[in-house]
Length: 215
Image 1 (cartoon, helix red, strand yellow):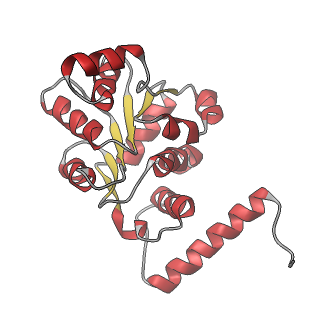
Image 2 (cartoon, rainbow, N blue to C red; image 1 turned 90 degrees about the vertical axis):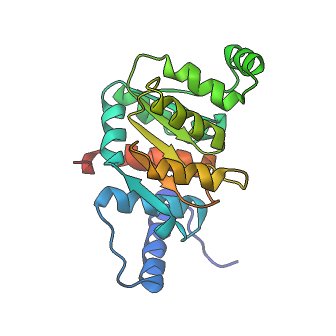
């Protein structure tokens, strides 16, 4: 067996070097809009090994700055899945005083979803809307959660500071993300069918790890 890298940080560094080499090969003229967008897109690729995110990952209405503000000012990150929550660096979030929750398995959410005939993801958004902090919603799995955010925002019942909208799948995944992209809500959006809870967590971490670069 040939020698291979065993030191974690060296593996990560090598991965990002390879990502940049591949970007140079795919599109030698590709330019990033900011250092944080570069870090975020590269982390998306690092997490998924999918270079489509060079074109599919979009940033609207100064979303990165809004997410960083919530993180650094005692706000709350709400995820649609426990998997997305598990992937976030909670030690670093704790260190800066940022809260985080996933309500999908809460008894109140089960009861509200059953009573109203809606998905638990939608009910979880309603519960989160009642929390009196600034809010970032992180959606990696449930298009209905994105639609609920858009619906409540339009009705004046919710004011999200930013949304990371990257649900994966076929039924309404692409459509819900397109609607978010076209809205006035600051957002990081993965257009099309691709996405997932792992990507959602990676987007949170990308901003968290680069707060010093956010202007």
